[in-house]
Image (cartoon, rainbow, N blue to C red; front, side, top):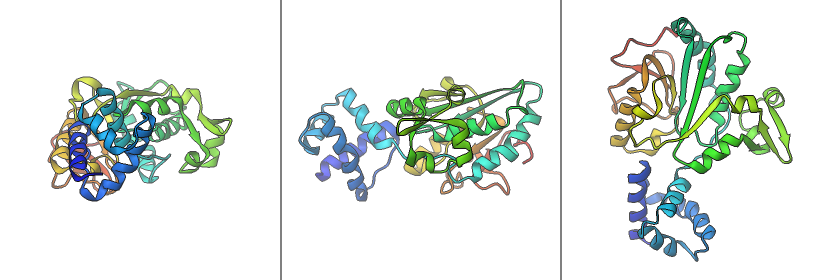
Length: 277
């Protein structure tokens, strides 16, 4: 790809999605965009970039989605889900005993493995949660990946990545060469298209738990700060924020502080403070 074409596409992606591509990521741009060019019957990236420069809205959307769709797998990194089950839920069940409602947001949910992992945990605790309303809202920039998430259909390779065999047998049905998660669990997750660079406050409402894992690593410092500021405005004063293992709020935002002894978990700096965990 020509340097000037790379610069143009990188700038467009930064504006549309927050994704920052350094020069050494040219290979990634080419590998993700060639399938887009082929689907449109184009000869190569030169023709694709020329069409992007004409700002065809549908093409710009396809290119943005192709570059921002990232892999996911069930119960990724294990620890956050153990924390959710053993510490966060018990704390919230105490703190919300009068309201009996908990809201969870999975930001940049990709193909749905994260929200469905949470749904499985909640299903396993069904008896304890009787009479409670627990909403899981999952959002992503890509409408195409959200359709895959809604369908809940996964390959053998995908279900082997993190899904214990006992839970696979319990909550999935074989569909030809694919596995589909149970309709009851699919119904537990509300999927919505959302760009994290937009104002999320009026769109989503408030949440008690927010998973925004392995998202900030793709943004520059300024964009990270903006996203965290927006997230802080939709989190309950005593809520919990999860970031990825390689992510932090330190030096980026003063809206959150780490929860002592709980790696990857954060609470609001100026709020009531998270319930003891």
